[in-house]
Length: 368
Image (tube, rainbow, N blue to C red; front, side, top):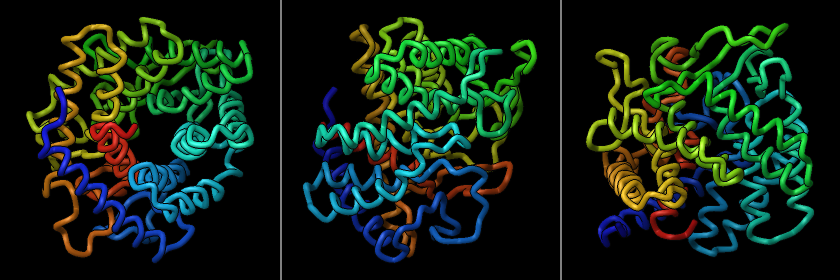
């Protein structure tokens, strides 16, 4: 299914609006990396929890450059990418894929400059150092014994670094992490757990847990979107059918459990949620489903994934979610959720929501 002329118009309008919002952000608060809004405003003293979002602003600037070819966006994209270069050796987070895939990898794809590629490869090498042989997983930032579903969105940079350097050991770590996540965090119905806990001495899996969902055994929407997108990415590197099967199982759960407009609540299994929407999960899912439409070998599923992704994008480019008709709002996409339990960025704009929304919009327009 090709996008309608109306949807293409909405996508172009959304990118124009994003340009205005991002210009305001980087000129009003230069060299800052806000994560979420409070009452629609980016700059505030709210808690960060962890340092994982610094790539999404530069990533949006690269997307705008690709869309407009305006040298202003190119210069700003390079500048905001350089501001995070030092993070390529950051051993404290599991999020180096988020930081460097959206910025330096886009930069490299545009230029083919091996110096730029070296930064991406070094980030992947650094991330691989989080691997725990006992348990066979990349540890989360929270604790040695903790595995997060989110890391599926970051493991791709390890596969890439291994591919670029011919490092079989690094490839093995990325493979084992992906298989461990598939076994212990993805359930038989396609729902996912946020976290898995392991015995550090034996590597034995102990239990599923959550920091962001309703309960340990429930289904936190953004985590499932990370899995849907991330396992598809791993399949694109490995061509191992197990990963495509897992991504499609997660996609099936998303489609079956989400309202017709395509935007889930923060957790599908929470009874009577206080807020109906988690728009960042929808944006991630839309972009991931567009990837799956290309990756799956089944034409009927390809059509289903693309059709459903277009439905999500159609919803998110409407006035309920796009902030273009909300005076004073500084973000792009409303009704996002950072950390409901901690009360951070609840029903706000969140930087990764804006990034994956723009990525999905660009894919709809054929620019990705």
